[in-house]
Image (cartoon, rainbow, N blue to C red; front, side, top):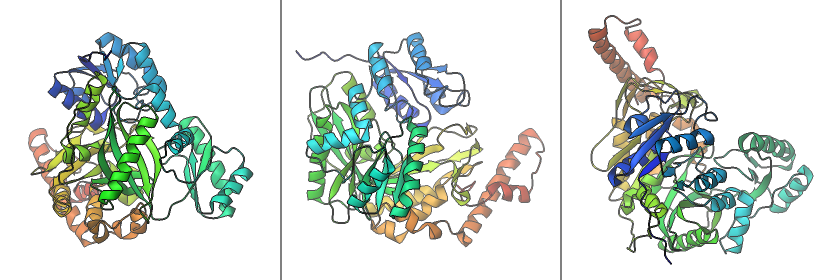
Length: 503
């Protein structure tokens, strides 16, 4: 007997920032009540203001707020929520949290705890994928002894990657090019893995030269149907963290897309998956692809898939969690889309985070432009959390139009008060190799010096930024009286290096 769909009425969003606002928007369209949770630094955050109800978690650090399951479940009980959407990060890929939701009668808007646990342990996931006929990068099971690991590294041939078995996001990962460097790197990875994940097990993978990082979005319902919604190219990465994504991938051919899409569906079916997820692959120079990992949650870069398919992925997550089957309709890619992640960080100072007060904010607009954000003018960006401020997403009929639109949108973006990576993003999207689509995961490292070079255009932009700061201070003075340091020199200092007030 088919289980009757259950309508979810009140959804607690166990997250913060732009992704919490993103989920709240779809809930509002669907007529679902939203419950926000917030830490002390986030008391005035946009996701708190936008929600129907909001409850304090008390505290500042992630461990005592958004990672505290007891507090979240207490709020779910008090608010009368019947479901939890975890967003991404924090508890989104924590199997014990998903299981605890189920035990308390809360619908977890995501996959089962069993799927999360299976795919979260990298070596077990590799074994399951291999049995399902999904190509995997040559590698090893978890290794504890450095001499055994070195022997396996020689068998694979250098360079190799040492990776945390329970890892992700580039943590607990080292590339090793020579046997002499292996021992220290192996021990360093174990320490980092233990610190980040509470698990010091590591394994080896053969390092692929000039790889592309390509992922496929999948959806799977409780009736056993699994589909993919095409690929996303995610090769623009700094320290294994994506900062620009696009779809379709410039690397893709019709045949490769078909084969990778089929492999992505097989991978999801092999772990009994339901809801939204992403299968990540590495593609080598010969267009051979290998399973990398599965993200058992909504991805940061999901908006570009929405832009080219017309599918609201958050809505699909909610519908699947309610028991509805996937719609039986043909999916196709229309046009191209690109996302730039906007961070509160200073590229010209080792990418250090740049928390502080956003004094003025004017996001870009126009045809095909979407700005998913969790901040506003007057909000103080806290130092306790990831510095992601917004995701600038653009759509175009073809890649040339999308590039031009992204360049224009980045030029229009105005954020005064803190440093951001917007000037750095401008340089990337205007780089000739990126414009041709001729890039891989080494692009940022290869072009680091030229992307961070300070030139005359930066000097002129800072002058404009200083003028903007003076204009703002003039407005402030007219309403609030004289302000200390109200001079061109102090405004120039406030504008600082590229990536500050000119963003």
